[in-house]
Image 1 (tube, rainbow, N blue to C red):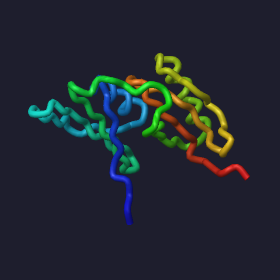
Image 2: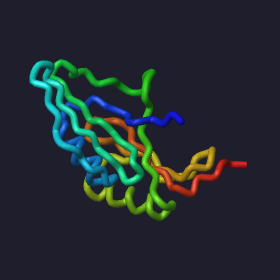
Image 3: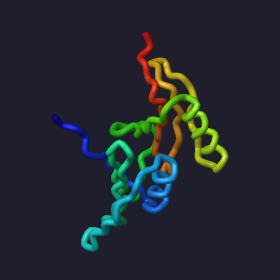
Image 4: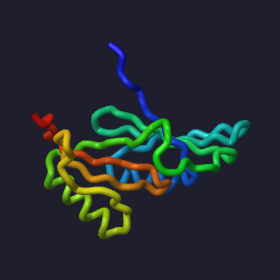
Length: 134
């Protein structure tokens, strides 16, 4: 059976991105990888479910995408229930993490909040009680 091994995202500030995903979502960062020939540096973060996220930076990758564009739209993390999503949203606002949508129940049945990571990438946090709208 095929499974997704990991997703990767380019960032300008590797340490800030690592701190965001470890602090807010419990990712555990592996050792810093650095390729002196290309300038590529990465951390691979592993989450409790075994999911992995690679954070990458390289000196020549400097232009961020703007707004909606073709390609990845967001990454999503699941918490136990709507009160857990509400609590995370409240804590995020208290410390200045930008909350861009919600918390709310979506038309297709998710309970979610959307945040921006330090690079402006959309991160959705959903309740694990998803049930499709009937």
